[in-house]
Image (cartoon, rainbow, N blue to C red; front, side, top):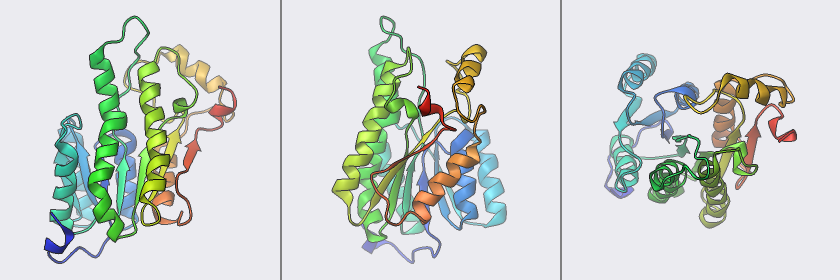
Length: 253
């Protein structure tokens, strides 16, 4: 839907966040909402968590949150999410590509299904969401923030497909920063050990990683959310940049 066909845009800036029901995505949502943003929150399966998050945010500011359940592997999802955001709020200032799949894929055991799953969420969907959102973001001189990983540049053993997909997302960040400038800024945040994945990381592996992290501890989701907020609201002369928030992890990889 073209912006000219929309009625009375909301006064608050609007952010679309993927994978927003749980974990870091939910903290990003709370942080941007507290900063005055109206939100379009994508999720796939976490209905109860998203309902609770929406209820909490709407209690603070009624009418400020739209939630959308969708599968990012569906090629039609990116356009549908952006269209729904514009239909509800009339404008879009920021896109946060947070949704991600993570799983080990050791050589000799990886399948084409693993490839499709990991690239769909970590690379393909962010690109096509960015493409769909670009016209609306350009009007607002808006921005895109991608959640990448420190392992996009330094491989994690037994996770080649995940690392490749995140590396593609880093290159997308840099490419779109050139192609969408000067009207749209495109940056990324690379978290280190913030929240352990739901699977694929044993306790021993967690402790080994922390021992090789300069600050010797995990970070907090607020660290990532604040980095995202800064890139959206305050980093006016920053584009094509990957902001690493890893407690010094990459010093010892």
